[in-house]
Length: 263
Ligand SMILES: N[C@@H](CCC(=O)N[C@@H](CS)C(=O)NCC(=O)O)C(=O)O
Image (cartoon, rainbow, N blue to C red):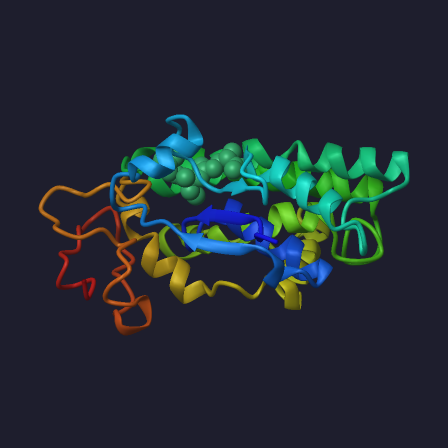
């Protein structure tokens, strides 16, 4: 039987959600992950599968159907392999984790808008906006999961959705000196973030990889786009990220060359 295939961009947070979900289910090897290079135009055969859209991941089922959107693909995989369900089964608990999941879009947008910002004057506003997003999560968890690390007893659906974003936001820590203030307003969400980052099912990427690959995002160029004066994207596969130096942190003062980035 042909395995389902996920077309993905390595280091993409939405793709990592699928890897985490499958790892939690002990099914990581039952889905084939096929790598797409975000720095190159999408090949025609892929655009035919997606009917022209470029966002990844997509999943191609064993019988050739295409499913888009990471949260929808998560639903599909959780239903396809029903043992060890990741989504809550109890209707109320499922509603609670769905309410938390609905917060991921604004949370994600705020972090990406901030990392891509090039106007130093907007930094404070963006930081305030990011803190407001964390405060929302803090409030939600304080109401629905005041004690314990996770939303429910174990790392589950909401954690699989959010952890890839917590990991990407290492780029805010590095390029924007962002850290959650160590006070009561964020204590519950900080405990959640820490528990999520430490979980064995999420170790597909590292801080070093994210900081190095997302350098161009920090300079305002997303999705493998090329910055002026550069010949290679920080998302290039070669040279491998481990062989490159850590990028300069001072994104508002300096634009690193390919050579400085080890590209
Ligand atoms: N809402 C989508 C977002 C997917 C998305 O934005 N993927 C990025 C990679 S991290 C992408 O494919 N960007 C390239 C493009 O859109 O052409 C999901 O959850 O799957």
